[in-house]
Length: 309
Image (cartoon, rainbow, N blue to C red; front, side):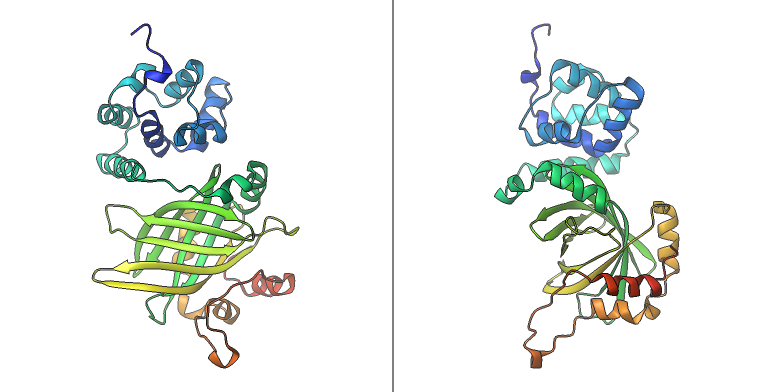
């Protein structure tokens, strides 16, 4: 094995994709800096994940230490690699299978848009630091049920050209978990997320305004949600969606507790106006639309918000 190099690692991209699910990129970056005094960036990890670049021997050794494995474990076949990595990091069998399936699904194809290359990393970084955090998400059911749905969305990781998100949806007293990706194109933010495999397969897409060039602090995002499929029925439908950013002091636990206490039958009328799906054909408004909110209207929303500032 003395002459084996980094280029001899088979399926390296798949292995690093799996590793970045076991230990998220922001944790790898923090552990490398805090424990080993070494620098590794999200841009570097993304280049490895997408196959644009491979690590040097020193970087590979650093990442292996952060992942609690031996450098030579990367030379195992994919199945054995995932077994070793999951065992060393106490990843449950259920989540190991979920992560493996996601990696295998990604091998079937990848999202390549020219718009990503035009949205520069520096601009994406500026966007991330402006919008990252927790949001309460309000929308009416897209299945024509007159009930307000509420969820907690966390904009949490920067992985150029994407931003990682997680969503916890509260429906009928039960929590449903989604993971996904946010990316920016011109004046819009696009979110694509999916349910965890142990529940049911659902893909949801959201488009909102892009506040990167607004001078003021971000408090709300306004947009449209697209989804989804149920058994034997397809709903090519849309609904307006309104997202309220929580103050920085909120943790996931405190945000979920607050979300569970909100009476969705009694949300402010101003919120209802932003998520209503009614179309007035007399005014030729045949499509749902959402626009950048004015500063005056945002002040009104803050006054009636059920969120404690």
